[in-house]
Image (cartoon, rainbow, N blue to C red; front, side):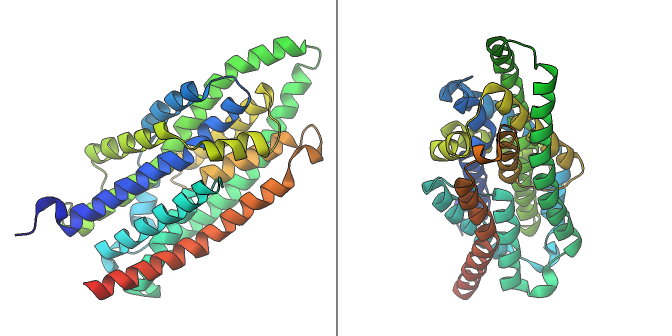
Length: 331
């Protein structure tokens, strides 16, 4: 008899949790980079805040989980090998990006990984283009609202407080930034955290544990806690890229970037649209940085980040395809 924890289902479930852990580990800087770079919170305080709020955000709904779990690929045409290959590709790519300090997108990695692995195991008819439309909408949504939301919020604050004392304004928004960082962490969990909850539930369907796709509370709890632990470990290379190298941030701009990004992410989560939280916060940071002068944004660093985003789709897709083909040959 096959050992319980060595059965294919349990191995794949552990791989999903590993990907969720990496999601918290590498995407944690999205929620804490700005608040650390403005020195409003220490790294340890910021990580503690992000760990708790990321986990709570992941428990706040299931709309994004449903889109990922049953809207990207036809679940009736894939198998456990598909999910295993996708998770291995995500972990490999995310770890590589973390090593080089590049804030890559777990969302794009997940969609590309699932699609690439599904193409290898079931052919081109497995892709569900309605779900892919949501992904593309999320891409444009995050870019537009991130950049212009950050820019407009910053401009409005400077307009309202133009006569205020700089020290007073800095202290005020230093306090407010704690709340915007909490909002950003919560929204990250409500979108990115839910994606792997959807994959976990999909795996249970493929393994025969669930008769149809649904998200039990215990699945939400396990995945949320796993992401929270990953967040607690953090990724300081990415904090440096986002909060220190991309543009110079002060509490006003940090508050504006977090508020704009978190608002866009939370709206998308309620609509079931999976978007890149990394993409959203980075474009928000670029938007707030450009309010002082266009050259205040280090566009060379921004170019490196954009290249990482662009590479995520083909690299994760091809890697997952290759892994799925290899695993299929071993069966």
